[in-house]
Image (cartoon, rainbow, N blue to C red; front, side, top):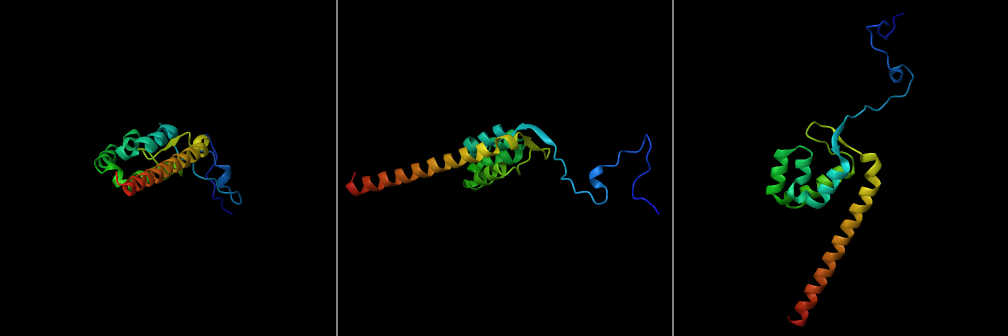
Length: 137
């Protein structure tokens, strides 16, 4: 009977316990970037329409495109923000920004509050404009 394991010895790499037959699979480890999730998220939230988040993540080419298109007319801005919040954003070296797990809940809450305040401000502004038009000013 032959074994699927490599021969043991000082030169042979250690066989990972998780890959032994019958053991559960282990998720691959994703290398983290030297760039911070919190910094990337705040830049995306506050200055994402200028592409600053892309520049921070080392993606200069798409940062310039995002700058010239005002965040893809707002669509690219929202997509990048959601990708960051979902933990799917990567830097130029295809590494995830560090600190996501510790800050994701706060980031989602603050982003939701920010969107709510922006929506409320838009509604109030529209109501004031409609009232001013109705009055005749």
